[in-house]
Image (cartoon, rainbow, N blue to C red):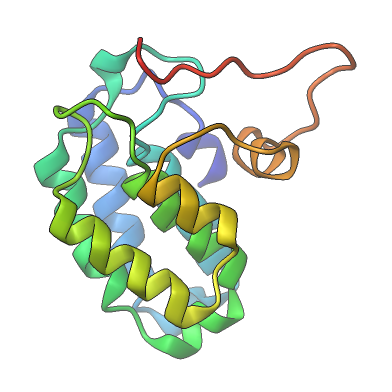
Length: 160
């Protein structure tokens, strides 16, 4: 699942199919061991700010809004088991970019922020949803999946 989630160049229709199946998987108890990977994958597929793909590969806002609504409605017990990956997932899908074509509506962004505060999400995740900004090293490593080689860093692609 994480491998598929990292393929930013997938067409939107394929990203949608995978993300919607992953969201369904979150409701299945027998897939509990995979829930963390499912959260990570959904967040990467619905990310508003690609790591290396172009903006044309970003999933349309309307689709991601529906995913966010489903994510907010997830069982609190499942959220608490995988809080950091769940929070990362919501942050990536809701992250403010300053681009009206990629940003989710302000009303939904406010709901996400309130939800993240209620569940005890990291303050940086909440800040990235409300104000935008760059990622810190630990979030970069969570998203990329590996530590970047010494001397390399991810460029801020906001405003491309």
